[in-house]
Length: 61
Image 1 (spheres, rainbow, N blue to C red):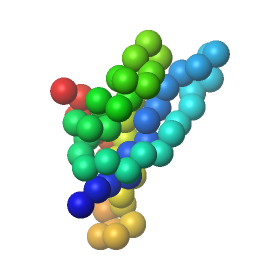
Image 2: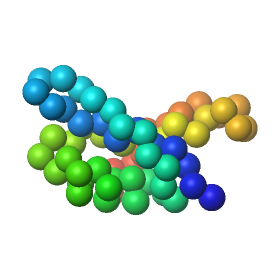
Image 3: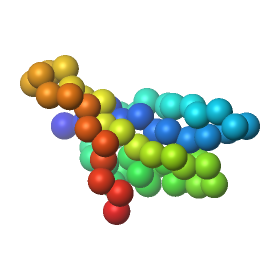
């Protein structure tokens, strides 16, 4: 089952996010590196609503 992740990057001095749906944090980080390799700031999992848990930052690998 896929999860929603926010890809966080900095462009022209401003933080920007893009929400993507991928299988896991590894794929989210891979996508972030492919698209924004020079301006990565983080990846955050968004799937909180279904089971009541809060969104959690992914662990960098």
